[in-house]
Amino acid sequence: MTDMSTPRKDPDFLQIRVHGDDNRPTLIYLPGIHGDWTLVTAFRLLVQDRVRFVEFTYPRTTSWSLEEYAAGVVKKLDEKGIRDGWLLAESFGSQLVWPMVGKGMFKPEGIILAGGFGPHPFKLGVHLSKLLCAAIPMAGVWLALAFYKLVSRIRFRNQAESMAAVEEFVERRTYEDKCAMTHRLRLIAANQPKELASKIEAPIYHLSGLWDIVVPWGAARRWVKKHVPKYQGQKLVAAADHTVLPMTPKQSAESILGWMGIDHVTA
Image 1 (cartoon, rainbow, N blue to C red):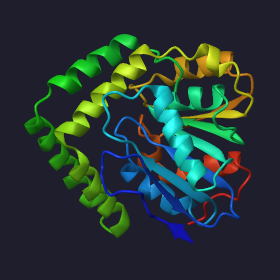
Image 2 (cartoon, rainbow, N blue to C red):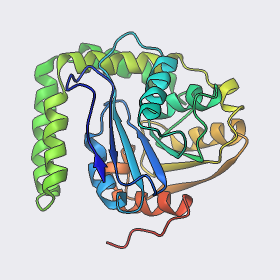
Image 3 (tube, rainbow, N blue to C red):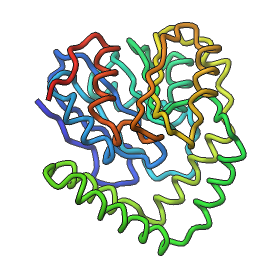
């Protein structure tokens, strides 16, 4: 059973979708800086027969704190009767994990950081990204999106649902969306979650692309290993960069399902 209902169609409202029956293990996806479920589609298609997959789209807010993001996610989960499961936190999504779990809002069975981190290992890079995101004209954004869409048509030529998700991703990239991403970069730059991380009792794993230059995985792993009591280990995916889930969905799915104690992907 798949519940794809949302309280509103408004893209500025926090949205949740649930795929799969509630008798399966639950995997809760917290998206990265782009803020929605569009880029995780290929991964979701690989795992949705083995897990109940829960995914979010963030509001285009420029005022929420990380704690407000976390509280909003927990409220939506509670409305669906979801009170446990595994957290799959991609990049910016990892920043929600620290208040969400460290403050006792949600008690997961386990946590997987996909390109995730505590404090960003390269704060200057975050500040520069924030300035670039704020300054780039929408014409430049649309040009980049046109190229991405062209490449995706080749990559997903036999995957209609994945290509439809790319179309949705492109449609959502508006000026308001750009402002929301700039705000998320501000939150990353200011975050210092050491105290909250030390309170997390769930096992935590780190999934990274070998060629990740956005979040240097060595520094990110060392911080998590040092400050989270039940750090369990890391998987490096040789063919991936920072976008490890959309770039290498099969390898990512095999690692994640393995950590959850579920049979690997065979298709």
